[in-house]
Amino acid sequence: MRAREIMSTPVITVYRDTALKEVAETMATRHISGVPVVERDGRLCGIISESDVLIKLEYAALRDENRLGLLDRLADKLGAVPKPHARTAGELMTVDVITAGPDATLREVVHLMTSRAVNRLPIVEGTRVIGIITRADVLRILARPDDAITQEVRWRLQHDLWIDPKTVTVVTQNGVVTLGGMVETRVDAELAARWAATVAGVVDVDAVGLRYHIDDHSVRAFTDRLR
Image 1 (spheres, rainbow, N blue to C red):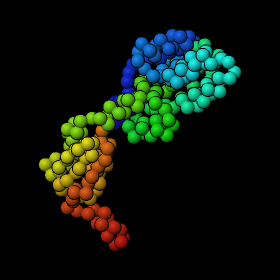
Image 2: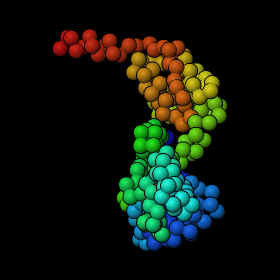
Image 3: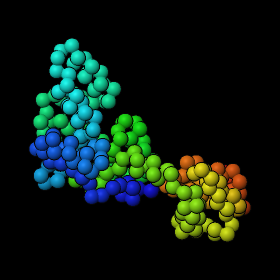
Image 4: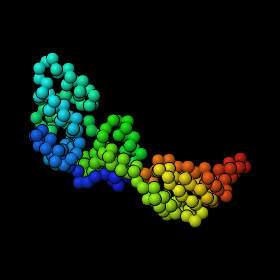
C-alpha cells in the first residue's frame, strides 16, 4: 500500500503570516493536532504541532523567572522548542519538516514516523503538499478486518503473481496471514509470502505450510555448476 492510498486530502494548511490565534482556532475547530505551513504559492515551508502551540500558551502563565525552568522541562518532554515571542505561524513553525512522497510504502511511512518521532507526515509532490498521514491513519490500516485482508491477499496472488487461487489456502487471524497449499516453484512460494506481507493490515506472514513442486533454486545451482 502506498502513501497516496492512505493520506488524507485535501490538506488543512495555514500560511506563513497567519496569526497564531487563527492557527489555534483552525486546529481546534478542525480537530487536528498539527498543520503544515505553506507559502502563498502553495510551497511547504514548515509545520506546527499542538505541542508548539501549547508551549507558546504556557509561556504566558510562567513569566516569572522562577517558573521558566518548568517551561523548559515541559518543552523538552513534548519535543518542542520554546518560541515565546512568536506571533505568526512562520515564527512558531518547525522548518525541518519530515515528509514522504506519494509512492512511499506503508512500511516506509511507519519507519519515518517511528525513527524520526513524528506524529504526522506531509505527503509532498515536488514542493507542494498533496496529502497528510497521521499515526491514527496508520492505526486504522492495521485495524483492518481479517476477511478484507484475506480477500486482498488472494486477489493479489492471482492477479499479480498468476498463482491459481484454487491451489493456495489463505487464512488471516488477528492480522497474521497463514499460507498453505501447493504452488509450482520455490520462487512462487517466496514471492507469495512477500506479496502477502505488503497487503495493508498484515502483521505477519506464516508460509511454512506453503509447498512447491519444483525447487528452482536447486535447479539453478545445478545448472551453474555445469557451466
